[in-house]
Image (cartoon, rainbow, N blue to C red):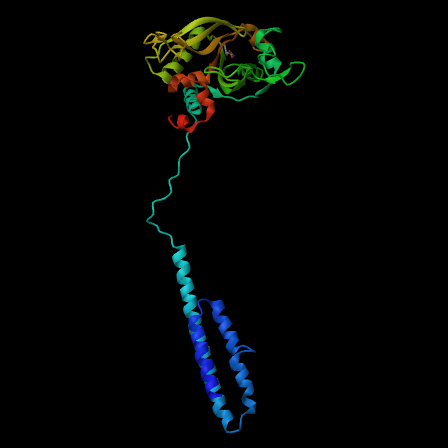
Length: 347
Ligand code: DAH
């Protein structure tokens, strides 16, 4: 029995040493000290021993049990420490590794130009207003003095929602003039940027959706001189003091007189050609059309309850994409809508 105890002890000690984790160690514990363990089995045989042998063997068995239990605790502590060590090593953060680079987003170039334009007009006392993209024909056309049958009302040019051609995607920001004037008496000084929609095929200078910035000023004694002053301020702030602009007579149903404003082409400097080739930016024109403008038609004022005998006003509608192309010097409108980061990140 004595040898048996020695053997159990040395095998258990070896197995504890060999155990590489807490689960394996517990298996060793159960196999020796558990209810059905080897040592427990030996102790059960004690009863069969003689009265002299029993206390000696009992003592020995208890000593073996105590030694094994002590070693078990020790080994358990070792394995726990090793596990902690491994966990710390695996989870260690090396604070000296350079951080992953975060790429910053860019303001869209058109937004940038819009922001500049807004700031210039806010500086001149204008208020920024916003209005619906789904508009009534009454605001988009009729109340702007655009009569039934006018080509711009045609279904081939305008996106309508209904069979009666009464509800549409606004084709211009000019309906905002009506929306503001029917709400507010002069003095009025507003800027209304937004999206507009036309059934245009997309090419280098056209897109079915584009942006306009409408401006409207109504007060006593407003003249064409005020219009020129406001627009020249805008253009010189945006393009520099040496920018060359021209005011050209034009016709719009809602302004009288009306004009269009062009900027001299930044690419060919007004020549229309570069090295004998037609300039691709202005198509040989030498000028780039930026906006339409004029003095608000008396009929339009009257239709909004503003007395045209007392008040006058000017209005303008800027093509934001055109303005951005000139400001940022690129020559294909589609680049603005394609969302190619290689293009957008340049500004
Ligand atoms: N709405 C016109 C267009 O889309 C542009 C325009 C012309 C706006 C004259 C105006 C204006 O306010 O007075 O072509």
